[in-house]
Length: 175
Image (cartoon, rainbow, N blue to C red; front, side, top):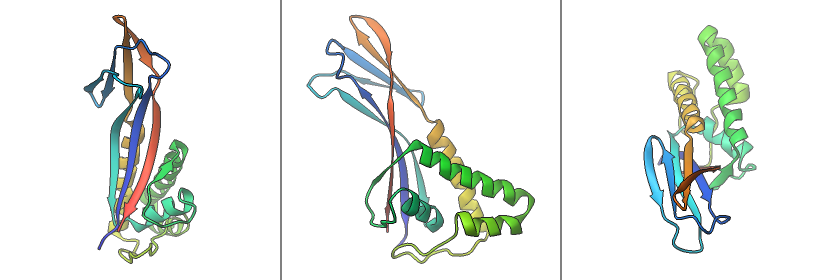
Protein backbone atom coordinates (compact mmCIF):
# COMPACT_ATOMS: atom_id res chain seq x y z
CA UNK A 1 0.00 0.00 0.00
CA UNK A 2 1.32 3.45 -0.86
CA UNK A 3 0.31 7.09 -0.86
CA UNK A 4 -0.37 8.41 -4.37
CA UNK A 5 -0.95 12.16 -4.64
CA UNK A 6 -2.13 14.29 -7.56
CA UNK A 7 -2.43 18.02 -8.16
CA UNK A 8 -4.19 18.88 -11.41
CA UNK A 9 -4.80 22.15 -13.18
CA UNK A 10 -7.74 22.77 -15.47
CA UNK A 11 -8.48 25.76 -17.67
CA UNK A 12 -12.11 26.42 -18.48
CA UNK A 13 -13.51 28.64 -21.19
CA UNK A 14 -17.00 29.98 -20.62
CA UNK A 15 -18.75 30.70 -23.90
CA UNK A 16 -22.24 31.23 -22.51
CA UNK A 17 -22.17 34.97 -23.31
CA UNK A 18 -21.51 34.49 -27.03
CA UNK A 19 -24.27 32.46 -28.64
CA UNK A 20 -22.95 33.39 -32.10
CA UNK A 21 -19.63 31.65 -31.53
CA UNK A 22 -18.89 29.18 -34.32
CA UNK A 23 -15.64 27.69 -33.08
CA UNK A 24 -13.21 27.87 -30.20
CA UNK A 25 -9.52 27.08 -30.50
CA UNK A 26 -7.68 26.35 -27.27
CA UNK A 27 -3.88 26.26 -27.19
CA UNK A 28 -2.14 24.37 -24.42
CA UNK A 29 1.47 23.18 -24.23
CA UNK A 30 2.01 24.07 -27.86
CA UNK A 31 -0.89 21.92 -29.05
CA UNK A 32 -4.20 23.01 -30.52
CA UNK A 33 -7.51 21.65 -29.31
CA UNK A 34 -10.62 22.68 -31.26
CA UNK A 35 -14.15 22.77 -29.95
CA UNK A 36 -17.30 23.61 -31.89
CA UNK A 37 -20.21 24.38 -29.55
CA UNK A 38 -23.29 22.36 -30.51
CA UNK A 39 -25.53 22.44 -27.46
CA UNK A 40 -26.51 24.64 -24.53
CA UNK A 41 -23.41 23.75 -22.50
CA UNK A 42 -20.79 26.13 -23.78
CA UNK A 43 -18.08 25.54 -21.21
CA UNK A 44 -14.96 23.85 -22.47
CA UNK A 45 -12.40 22.39 -20.09
CA UNK A 46 -8.78 21.72 -20.91
CA UNK A 47 -6.69 19.55 -18.59
CA UNK A 48 -3.30 21.16 -18.16
CA UNK A 49 -0.23 19.88 -16.39
CA UNK A 50 -0.68 17.58 -13.43
CA UNK A 51 1.80 16.94 -10.63
CA UNK A 52 2.25 13.52 -9.05
CA UNK A 53 3.95 12.40 -5.85
CA UNK A 54 4.33 8.97 -4.29
CA UNK A 55 4.64 8.54 -0.53
CA UNK A 56 5.55 12.17 0.16
CA UNK A 57 3.67 12.21 3.46
CA UNK A 58 4.97 15.67 4.42
CA UNK A 59 3.53 17.21 1.23
CA UNK A 60 0.26 15.33 1.75
CA UNK A 61 0.07 16.52 5.36
CA UNK A 62 0.50 20.12 4.17
CA UNK A 63 -2.50 19.72 1.85
CA UNK A 64 -4.57 18.04 4.59
CA UNK A 65 -3.87 20.89 7.03
CA UNK A 66 -3.93 23.86 4.63
CA UNK A 67 -6.49 22.84 2.01
CA UNK A 68 -8.64 20.05 3.42
CA UNK A 69 -9.35 21.53 6.85
CA UNK A 70 -7.72 18.57 8.61
CA UNK A 71 -9.86 15.97 6.77
CA UNK A 72 -7.63 13.17 5.49
CA UNK A 73 -10.36 11.34 3.60
CA UNK A 74 -9.17 10.54 0.04
CA UNK A 75 -11.56 13.05 -1.53
CA UNK A 76 -10.71 15.65 -4.20
CA UNK A 77 -10.31 19.20 -2.90
CA UNK A 78 -10.21 22.45 -4.83
CA UNK A 79 -6.95 24.30 -4.24
CA UNK A 80 -6.54 28.03 -4.72
CA UNK A 81 -3.57 29.18 -6.77
CA UNK A 82 -2.34 31.22 -3.80
CA UNK A 83 -2.16 27.96 -1.80
CA UNK A 84 0.01 26.35 -4.49
CA UNK A 85 2.23 29.44 -4.37
CA UNK A 86 2.36 29.25 -0.56
CA UNK A 87 3.55 25.63 -0.65
CA UNK A 88 6.14 26.51 -3.30
CA UNK A 89 7.44 29.36 -1.11
CA UNK A 90 7.90 26.94 1.81
CA UNK A 91 9.72 24.45 -0.41
CA UNK A 92 11.92 27.22 -1.87
CA UNK A 93 12.81 28.46 1.61
CA UNK A 94 13.76 24.96 2.75
CA UNK A 95 15.85 24.22 -0.34
CA UNK A 96 17.58 27.61 -0.25
CA UNK A 97 18.53 26.93 3.37
CA UNK A 98 19.59 23.36 2.54
CA UNK A 99 22.13 24.62 -0.02
CA UNK A 100 23.99 26.55 2.70
CA UNK A 101 23.34 24.69 5.94
CA UNK A 102 21.81 21.20 5.99
CA UNK A 103 21.36 21.08 9.78
CA UNK A 104 19.59 24.45 9.84
CA UNK A 105 17.40 23.28 6.94
CA UNK A 106 16.44 20.15 8.88
CA UNK A 107 15.40 22.22 11.91
CA UNK A 108 13.37 24.51 9.67
CA UNK A 109 11.77 21.57 7.83
CA UNK A 110 10.69 20.00 11.13
CA UNK A 111 8.73 23.18 11.74
CA UNK A 112 7.43 23.97 8.23
CA UNK A 113 7.07 20.62 6.43
CA UNK A 114 7.78 17.73 8.79
CA UNK A 115 7.54 14.07 7.83
CA UNK A 116 4.43 12.73 9.57
CA UNK A 117 2.36 9.56 9.59
CA UNK A 118 -0.67 10.25 7.39
CA UNK A 119 -3.82 8.16 7.46
CA UNK A 120 -2.97 4.51 6.91
CA UNK A 121 0.52 5.38 5.66
CA UNK A 122 3.53 5.16 7.93
CA UNK A 123 6.15 5.34 5.22
CA UNK A 124 9.32 7.38 4.99
CA UNK A 125 9.74 9.40 8.20
CA UNK A 126 13.40 10.45 8.04
CA UNK A 127 14.89 13.74 6.85
CA UNK A 128 17.45 12.15 4.61
CA UNK A 129 18.30 12.21 0.93
CA UNK A 130 14.87 10.85 0.00
CA UNK A 131 13.12 13.70 1.83
CA UNK A 132 15.27 16.34 0.12
CA UNK A 133 15.07 14.74 -3.34
CA UNK A 134 11.27 14.71 -3.07
CA UNK A 135 11.39 18.39 -2.11
CA UNK A 136 13.50 19.12 -5.20
CA UNK A 137 10.93 17.25 -7.29
CA UNK A 138 8.11 19.13 -5.55
CA UNK A 139 9.75 22.44 -6.42
CA UNK A 140 10.02 21.42 -10.06
CA UNK A 141 6.43 20.12 -10.20
CA UNK A 142 4.89 23.18 -8.53
CA UNK A 143 6.83 25.57 -10.77
CA UNK A 144 5.68 23.63 -13.80
CA UNK A 145 2.03 23.52 -12.79
CA UNK A 146 2.01 27.27 -12.04
CA UNK A 147 3.73 28.15 -15.32
CA UNK A 148 1.52 25.95 -17.51
CA UNK A 149 -0.88 28.33 -19.22
CA UNK A 150 -3.38 28.02 -22.01
CA UNK A 151 -4.91 30.49 -24.42
CA UNK A 152 -8.29 30.47 -26.10
CA UNK A 153 -9.60 32.19 -29.19
CA UNK A 154 -13.22 32.24 -30.28
CA UNK A 155 -14.22 32.56 -33.92
CA UNK A 156 -17.35 34.63 -34.55
CA UNK A 157 -18.32 35.31 -38.15
CA UNK A 158 -14.75 34.64 -39.29
CA UNK A 159 -13.13 37.01 -36.77
CA UNK A 160 -11.05 35.82 -33.82
CA UNK A 161 -11.27 37.16 -30.28
CA UNK A 162 -9.20 36.11 -27.26
CA UNK A 163 -11.23 34.64 -24.40
CA UNK A 164 -10.15 34.83 -20.76
CA UNK A 165 -9.58 31.47 -19.09
CA UNK A 166 -10.43 30.43 -15.56
CA UNK A 167 -7.95 28.11 -13.86
CA UNK A 168 -8.83 25.62 -11.15
CA UNK A 169 -6.57 23.29 -9.19
CA UNK A 170 -7.59 20.03 -7.54
CA UNK A 171 -5.67 17.92 -5.03
CA UNK A 172 -6.45 14.25 -4.57
CA UNK A 173 -4.63 11.52 -2.65
CA UNK A 174 -5.20 7.80 -2.38
CA UNK A 175 -3.66 4.98 -0.40
